[in-house]
Image (cartoon, rainbow, N blue to C red; front, side, top):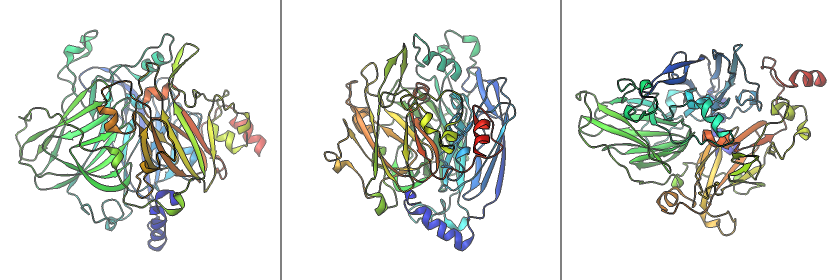
Length: 557
């Protein structure tokens, strides 16, 4: 519990005294299917959820029990759902990772059931079988405080408004005109076929693409489809924007012409407020930001652009109530960096018993060719699941981890009470370019203690570590050259390597992946596992079956 910066301990005490933990049961049904849509004007196969693209947000209160019934209407594909940022403490079989926490399921469907214990804020869910989130299998999860009198995020903080006049949840996606299945086939092929850059940016499933650029398939593009989304505000009022980077490849920079916003939460955890003109987001990250509608009534461009690769821009409009329904008269804004996310600070102090680590693991990611295939191995091991198709959590539960070839399925063991340091280094790709990576850890939140250039040296880099108020997150970036500004401003593409140091507390029994949240890097096997073995609960009876699940259960019983 200390891994939550003391916050969960405090809330649990309040919970016992005031019965905050007696949440409701919230039931949601998600019917997933394939349809042809034109989100940005270009028609392609997408995933719809209950006929929507993307899905409507799921809204719960902290301590509610969430029941999600998934109906799989795909013609032939199996699927799973992962709840990004939800640690699944006590329910590790609900993490939704195929062949790690469960078997994928087909038309029989599956029901996820778990208690939402996370800090109030913005989370999201997405498909985890292959890379289907790229095709639209995703949606927001909004966690409200258990009671309204606890403030906007349940912690009665006084450095932000306790109430707001309205909110907008914005799911941002870098969008491809090819579907993920075709792209992954290319990544796994010999010769290798790279995914390339996305074609547009979508806001809640809507964007705009110039059909004159659809040279090979002009008949599939219609400029009247798609569009420029509009978000309405009223002058003099205060709004909460819930920003979610749910895409596939690119870092996104979100800005509104003529307006600053205030960052107040990152990945569902409180941070010291920071006023910025752009919100800089890596894949899988979320920011809760405050917007004051304090400008003259009118229409203002929202511009979201990709960073670090070929620039792709996506436009939306912030429209004040009463303004004429027209395009903004100003030029589309071009935003410079005014804040490095590396400087984000938590509102809570690092707990004393988290200031010294007990275990250290190093993850070095580089690109190489293996048997004619280009992969992203970690510590020179491209991740592969064991043969046989039995979910890895069953290997842990039935004490069969010794049967796993750790030179193929790389995992690290942690125990309750272990203060674990993760040193993540990014090494050059096959073209000698050092890329940035978005590392997401299932099952835990971690403190981002520091970043720097080159390879990590604990003595040399001691002054780069924040052991006072590091942010608590579930997705973190490893930059070339150490920090975002250094990585972006360096003109030489052959930037030096960089490192990021993360720290988390063991004690969430389960099998938890850590992988790059860039869809194409994950498909190229950039993943490891953390196994918190002691105390894994008995597997539920209603899980889909595969591999040796039935055989091992009979042996166990």
